Image (cartoon, helix red, strand yellow):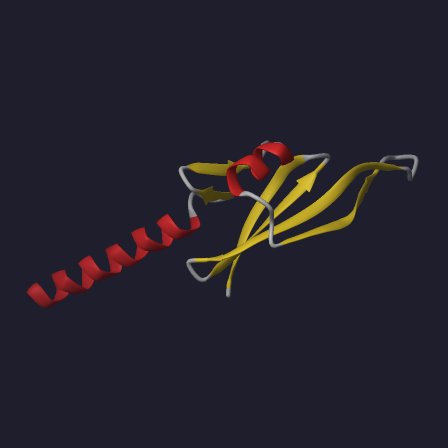
Length: 101
């Protein structure tokens, strides 16, 4: 019985550790702050500093096939064995994703 309990405690600790490393779904922790959907580029830069990589991915296209909003990806990490990619559309965070190193 105590062996099962120990295994359950270890599994629970691993899950909480993974949640702590990745932060909430669709967010990234920078110091005491979180980056989440809707944040502006200047807010991310203030909270997290300069990204390791910054790349223009493209533009959104309107119904008249004209460029509308700039799409960028900023990469941070490695942090806790993960790289975090923040996708901005029109200067706002639209997605935060992580990838194991």
